[in-house]
Image 1 (cartoon, one colour):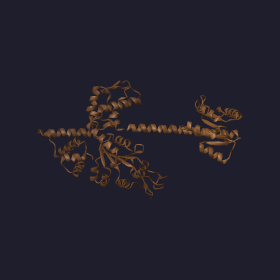
Image 2 (tube, one colour):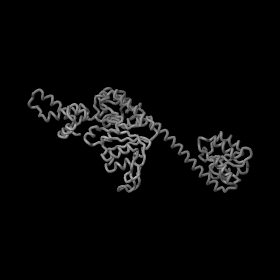
Image 3 (cartoon, helix red, strand yellow):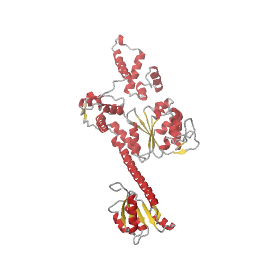
Length: 474
């Protein structure tokens, strides 16, 4: 394009009269026209101008149209330069020779100016599409690079021993394509770990498909995961490929895998063993090559023992297990996380908060963070409602009060201690003592039932009955 945004056309013809006619007629139709009377002159002109399109006479003395065409294509090899051949020798062999040399279109002499104008506009539309495609490809490459960088291990924040162990296992997981199960409480960053493994592995340029199993309607789980055929059920108005086939060649991340119903577990096991899926309502097995990354905030061993999770599937998916530690076990990482989240919020809200005051940091590090890293991020974001702050102070921070269950557990533990002093008014019954003792064990084991059972010296099935009897939840 020229400065006035008119498309620039380079006309190359050894006959001056033809050049003048084309310059005048194309100029009246809104094109800016440059002229050259020979191939070498046209090649020289390309050093100083970049045309949007070239009209090139095929029959010229010296450097003919075919040779000129090849030289032009070499010069503009990195971008699309449409070239239309003008030929008085409109025969099959000439057309083939021109197209094989790289011409994008041709028109025979003498030509109709309206037809030539239509061919020029068609080529310019193709050029515009080519530029848009190049821009899109560049943006995809940029975003892919950014995405890979976003989930590098270095961008998962932590320097404690617990996190160093996580990083070590992630590095190992990135070198293989076996299934990985990531365990941990809600908000500990299990999906971030899964993405870090995927984007640090050989599958980094392949799909990463996250699935929240707990959010899938029970009646649609198989359809969502494995696809369906049109008419397989009410509402199936067209075929669906399913999430496993969308992840083909890459990784699928099944979050809260422990919530999958037993029938869906059976089909998942078959997919992992056979490497194929059968859509709901279909008869054909479709091959899939997918790496499974899974996460859960429940104890899968307990689920197996309770008959809620298939034992064969459990052993199939737990080739490697990575625990995402709760924030209360990695408190030295809190200042690093706080600094990171303040940077994020400054960028998000266009602010320049410098950091956190000592008293505020003390409050943050002393808090137990039941919601883990996700809760910390939300608390920092909540501080930004104060529009005039330069530093985050204690008054800006809003932390949750202990839950009723935790308060009751602490009160029960205190009462358990009081009974040893022989105070008849505060003396507990055996049931009250047992309930308080179980609550204390649950708190000490971070609500892990297997650890709780070991602490109490009882079988897990007996512990479950006690939890149900005392309404302590499961």
